[in-house]
Every structure is written in C-alpha cells, then in structure tokens.
Length: 285
Ligand code: C2E
Ligand code: MG
Ligand code: MG
Ligand code: MG
Image (tube, rainbow, N blue to C red; front, side, top):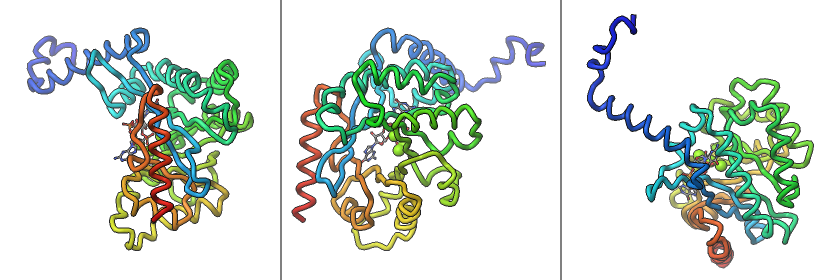
C-alpha cells in the first residue's frame, strides 16, 4: 500500500520531518567515513579514589569531530548502533585508548582503563578474544581493563553476551554497570549480573545539593552493592559537597567535572594533576 501511494507519500511529510530525515541520512554517510578519515578520537576522564588519594582509572570517551563540528556521543553512538558502525568505532576507541594509556598503565599495575561497550558489540562471538588480543598487542594487562555496559544490555541477555563478559572476566578484566539506577533492573537483580562494579548515575549524584540532605536511595544502592561484593563509583561529581557526601557513604571511587573534564591524550598530564589537586583540596576540608 505504501508503494502504491508512490511519490505522493512524500508530500505527507512535514517539512521539518523532511529536513530531519535529510540531516540524518547526511550524518549517517558522514559517520561511515569517520573512522577512515581519522575523525573519531578519544578523550579520557580521571576516576579518583578518595581513600588511596589518587587517580586510579581513566574512562575513554569517544569523540566525533566532523569537519570542525563536534557531534555529541549521545547522538552518534545510538546512530552507530543502528547502522552497524559501532563495531568499527568501538574497536577504534579501544585501540586508541590502549595505545595512548599503555605507558600510564605500565607505571602502576593498580591503574585501569575503562571503555564503554554497547550491547551490539557483545553480540559478536569473537568480541572478548579481539579485546584481549588488542590488549596483548598494546602491552596492557587484561586485569587493567574495565568494560562498561549499561543495564539495558541485560534486558534481553542471550548466552553470547554472557559468554563474552565471562570470557573477559575469566581473563581478569572487570565489568562495570554504567548509569546504574536509570534502567529497569531492580537492586535485587544485581546479584545475578556478571559485574564487578556499579557506576551510580549522575542523576542521583545531582540530588546532593548541600551535603546535609538525607538520600536513602543513595545509601541503599551503595550498601546493596557492597554487600554483594561489588565496588561503587559515583559519576557526575561536580561539587565538593557531593564528593564529601558520597565519600561518607563509603563510595569507592568518584568521577566528575570537580576532578577533571574529559581531555584528549595530549592533555592527560594536566587532567591528572587537576584531579589530584582537587582531591587534595577535599582532604584539607
Ligand atoms: P557515560 O559512559 O555514562 O559517560 C559519562 C558521561 O558523563 C560523559 O558524557 C562525560 O563527559 C559526562 N560527565 C562526566 N563528568 C560529568 C559531570 O561532572 N557532570 C556532567 N553533567 N556530566 C559529566 P559524554 O562523553 O557526552 O558521553 C555520553 C555517553 O555516550 C557515555 O555516558 C556513554 O554511554 C556513551 N559513550 C561515549 N563514548 C562511547 C564509546 O566509545 N562507546 C559506547 N558504546 N558508548 C560511548
Ligand atoms: Mg561510561
Ligand atoms: Mg554513566
Ligand atoms: Mg551516561
């Protein structure tokens, strides 16, 4: 029936819809060339341990510089997932992250690199093998890798996905549950998931304004994770009050603009020293 309507079908598009469609098609073809053109780069954001008083991890975050214009990951990652380009982009981020951090990682075995991985990538039967090969080639130990997945990947979790995560964990890598609390899974489901860490989403952290509020949801999440033997990272720490509050709840690691923005590899030194200064300022409070 749609075909019978023929060309006239297009007339039913609102001009805004038409423009959006053209833009999306344009963006899609641009994204196809992004990796070969070297437009995908990686920024790194420090994750600090208050207890250890240092930066313990860096999270790799994909960036797309499309001819001088930055397209945010919230736009191009879902597009890459829909168009099947996420495998290529994800591999690029993983390889770049390992190469750029190999030295920093080799200086201290307790340091690690976190990389976001989409459910689509975990459908690949040789995903874990590929990651471990990349690590070996870059001189990065598997136990220095953290794979970040969101709760949604477990929504219709098949064997392949669990197999890939298990293979990574068997080799010593860790799995972190990103944006924890925003998905559909309940706290109770946490014990069934093959994860080592939960990352409390920034929407919960942003509820801490003065540091004097009572936020049982935050303490419940942290206590539950700890009782299951998981470590906890809080995302989106922007103020000292938030850092103090989460530290008082015994959150293991903190990440956010208070410590550092995500920065490209050539500004890693500045990002690390900024994060460490912010950490010392907290200790002095
Ligand atoms: P995410 O993995 O939860 O990463 C944290 C996001 O929060 C990043 O946004 C980071 O820049 C931002 N952020 C960090 N600290 C703060 C803070 O203090 N306040 C606020 N308001 N935001 C903060 P970004 O870089 O725009 O990335 C957005 C999302 O895109 C990521 O969320 C992740 O889900 C996805 N993403 C990024 N890179 C990749 C990738 O290589 N592969 C996949 N599959 N997803 C990626
Ligand atoms: Mg993440
Ligand atoms: Mg997150
Ligand atoms: Mg997020």
